[in-house]
Image (cartoon, rainbow, N blue to C red; front, side):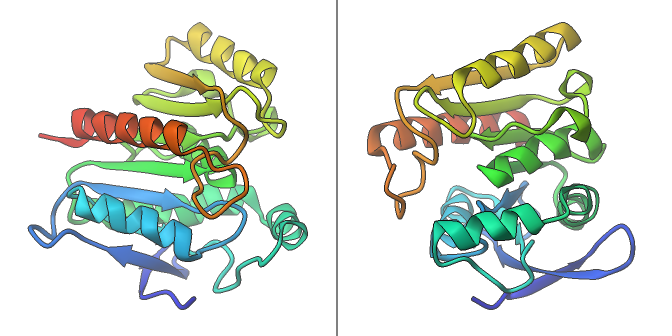
Length: 223
């Protein structure tokens, strides 16, 4: 699916993205939406569109540069091949900086692989004002979550085998030790419960997590 927008990364390179904004204002608060391992597909575009309907400028950096996975094996291959450091420090941070040109406040919202990158943005991007992560935990070597100094909201499934509850507990312990302003919600649901196009979609948990995310964004991006 072709991108309809582009932005400049901190290293000066141009990166493609999907972009949508609310009708009311071009300088509304911004949200960098970060894809799952599938790439930019219809589902992640719907997330961006819903955010625009809620009053936010939404920018989805195209981490796969136009490619998208059609099955789980291909998605895993693409995710494994992604340079997460480059994605976090260049694509995600560049997208944040791009929105900051017109938006006073900007948050990230990422899912699975994007949830990992949303937390990495909270660690490494000083321009960021808030972060939302749906079922994603970065590896220890990628950065110390105890250093996060912005509000962070995260959603996890208690039946998640990719990011199991004990990994969530370990992440929470680090944030507690660092005095991070965080809120974790745990749902009786599997991994990727918020993706309505995937086998593990849980409509009740997804709605609750979405409503909580909108409340969080309204609190931390307004004013």
